[in-house]
Length: 271
Image 1 (tube, one colour):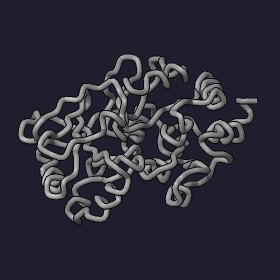
Image 2 (spheres, helix red, strand yellow; image 1 turned 180 degrees about the horizontal axis):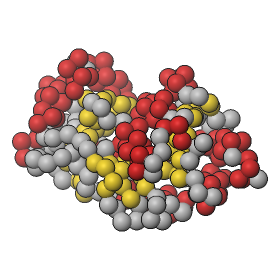
Image 3 (cartoon, one colour; image 1 turned 30 degrees about the vertical axis):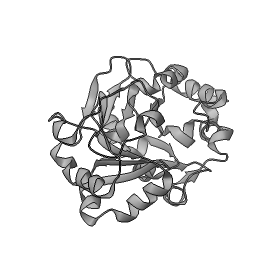
């Protein structure tokens, strides 16, 4: 029985203009009111998506969000962490050396702010993210010695294609590398994935992955699509995601594909 619906944002729940259609919002609000858990899963911090949470009504004491692609499970209203994991400054040394040797930018994030690495090529991540987070330009040697959520390379898509082709076996072993957007490449802990955070949240409620339905379109959604009892790929999703999914939405993200699939699966509740 599906008790939790997990949703990626970009090109999944969101239209290309970064809004949630009213059809998607109304459908999810009705399911949430009926007792189905609705969980947004994103690489962003919770403050950057607060408007979406309010639009969906996900502001009760029982509502949680998966942020930083699984590294932080956070209660929506209190902002208290249910689970948190990540990487140390030392863990990022091979990635910093790789970026330095090849002239690539790098931003390293903890759970509160972003550190554009000042001794590397300037980054465009702040311009792309457009989120209410502090960006503190810092040399790698001067980074604080605490837990970080991930690192990001944000640059032109053709440069990121080059980055991917140059990744060494050591880097691929050290990090879980995902292309979350054409111009954003993310470096997470080797075992980190949205499915990790969802597993922790499911356990919190006394459920397992058979109770989960997950929607996604891109590489950073693959883990939760595979793990879910019902993994649903967007019609506009990448071929690898569609191949791993149990089902596919009958419409794209710009055509309220999430709502249209849910209307088929939860006909009794949504009629």
